Structure formats: structure tokens, C-alpha cells
Length: 65
Image 1: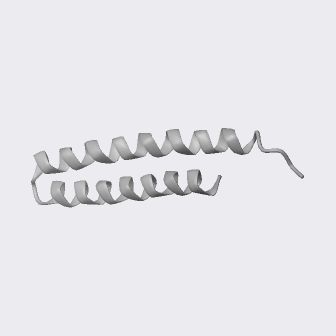
Image 2: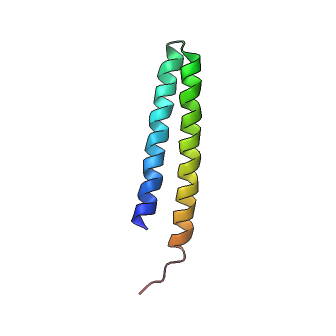
């Protein structure tokens, strides 16, 4: 289970980095580059959500000893 949560966390970190990069480009007036990075951030965020939801669902199905 840890690896699934770890993968979700990694995607969240990638999304955060892409958001920061998008903001930096937009502040410089580089809107095309900012938009590209914002799109990547959304993709990472969506993937992180799916992984986290899957990990959560699987953790509820685990048997307790």
C-alpha cells in the first residue's frame, strides 16, 4: 500500500512544481509557457487524485490480522 500512496504523493509534488513554474512564467509575461506548465500541473494533479483514490479504496479492503 505504501508504494501506491508514495506514487500519489510524487504526482502531487510534480503538480506543485508545475504550478510554481507556471506562475513564474506568467509573472514574466510568458503566458504560452505558463499555460503549458499549468496544463502539465492539471495532468499531474488528476493522476495524483486517481492514484490516491485507488490507494484509499484498496486500504479499506485490507484484512486486519
